Length: 474
View (cartoon, rainbow, N blue to C red):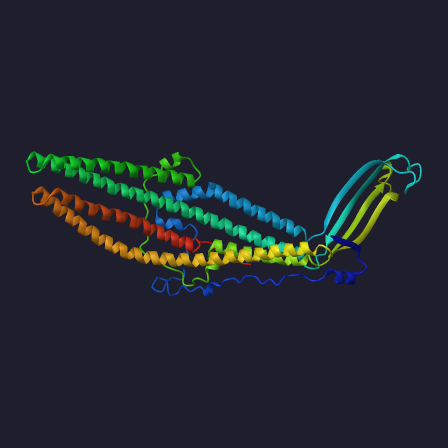
């Protein structure tokens, strides 16, 4: 409930308004990036001042086909269209909030046909008759916003626009990362197909050798059947990996908002994996301005904080200036006569008296929104720092695994060659050949996976460092 009075007594308004009831609320503290220790974790990593990724970071992999796919995705993705629509909505809210701070003028016209009572304001011939009543006027209104409610709502809306812009950048980064990761998986499936086809060739060679040994009376036919079974299983594995290649193509087509035929047009990837990684010199402090999700979360905190200020302003009286100018007549034919001009001005005050419970509830909602947005910001910042650390840990492990895999592959390949020669000469058995061949295949498959992981970790670092995003200043 509110009480309205003409403004002859502003002191009375202040006396009746009361003070804000904050309920003892203390906002959740925000984490400071400088307090999140990262220096020890990345102590042995390569550090460069300009190691932040640039926009278009995917071009460093040297594959024009990948560049074209990302261009298609960024041009036609529904997820980016959704983010753009959210940005337009936030911008519209900011326009409306800015308009609320300005005087409003409206041209109003109305006409009414009614019967006036005989014993009311108007004497005969109007009293007791049906009359056409008209009014044409310019109506003016201005909320003086003494307590800053509209200013706070405008600031909240502007922070909402900043959050929406950062969300759009985050969606763009997520889409580019998804395309690159799917492309890496396509590259991996091709590499595994190479390994499986090599396996098939080796199995067919072993089958041919086994058949020769049976013909020479050096082996029994059971070995031939066993070798034939291995060939059949390997052919099935080839079919499985070929299907995996097709599925990876379909996924890429979906990411670029195209049909499966677009994926069928893709050639084999030609990616150049990075030999090393480097970290920026100022971490984690600069993540605030480099990660779009962190920037969006921080803008949401600012927006919700202004929302609290607006809710607090509702506890104070509202003063509104009004004015009008135009024509009014109870006879439309005389409406625009100079004698029927109308002109007026005034002021009104709205005093919150018996609705303080509703105001307290609205304020508590705004306070809860602040706590929620701060918690989301803190978690986003923690996740950002952890993702950088995870890449460093994974890359170190990858370097060790790669060295061991290369040594294991060389040893397995030499063992397979020697075992095959011994089997050909009748100095070793068939199971030894299979065992040494499996070691080669295992090492080759691991090599393909490590290459894919090297590419994936480099993409993870780009994402962890914001993908070339820079928060706007001012």
